[in-house]
Length: 260
Image (tube, rainbow, N blue to C red; front, top):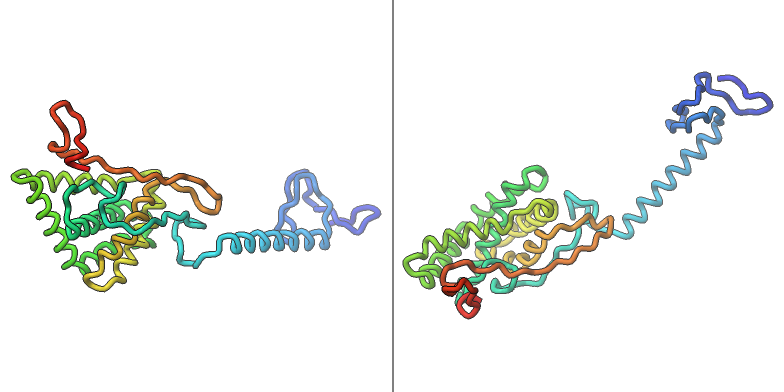
């Protein structure tokens, strides 16, 4: 290093108009060859203060537990009201269902969604969607078996001889209803949270998770950006149409009186 004429500043010996790495670790602008220790300390202090201020602003504006999100800086809200099972947008309509069958319908929808998540969300092992799903099947096996039996009973009662085919179609469409691409982060994050909720329920209380979180689960299928960037999307509930043959007349028109 050499002394600059008439100054206490020093010249970089390799100063050639290219960015130089200074002793503080900062990179000087191209062509900026004059540096002083005081200048370097000032720049480092200013940068640390700016970074601390930015972090404090984000923390205050979006305060949340450290475990609140795995895939977002600030998880968007997909929260929804508790449901019974016959509300628009929750699943395929099952007209004339008893309260017990509606409860089974909710459980079957939630189980299908968690199953899809176990397959789709393995890109993020920290979500543990596979482990959560398998633990739910073991811990809540009796309630899930009861839901399966209730859904079989519903289709036997309403579809007659074609009940098995109708039930298979219902199951396939329910699974397909959870398939997503653009909303995958929100869906996977929500599925992981619901899975943890379900595992923590006592045996026989899995339906409570379905009732309180199925609207949230469906809402998560709508693409939403990171809350840090204040993305504004509107969540619109949509009723899934029942495609069973009895729901359509001979002219191909939907008969809402029969199928809701």
